[in-house]
Image 1: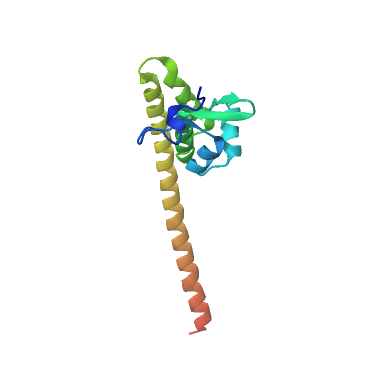
Image 2: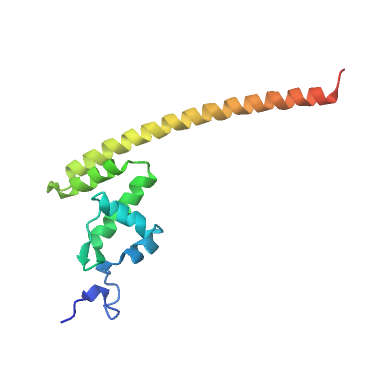
Length: 145
């Protein structure tokens, strides 16, 4: 009896996606540390199977990790990402999940747009300040007259 799923064997049919992953494989694929993956597991965002001391991650865990990292990149908190992931299992065709993600996405977008305006204002003010200082220094260094 072969305990390795067909999709994970070296002789698996071409194009058939892999069914399970080690922590090292996921860490390498997503350029994160195994420690980060264990952290997400500790937070209840991933739930690998265990075989003795080994963690076996499935396609669902891989997809969740991809969404966790995307959420992190977009600035969502882990609690928000966790909520989005948990809503997947409601059995409503992911309608509530989409509504929640839409609302959170709109909030995040509005916040980033406010930050962009604030940054643009700060950049303009700094350009004005540095320009004034450069002119004052040139005048001072040119001497009287």
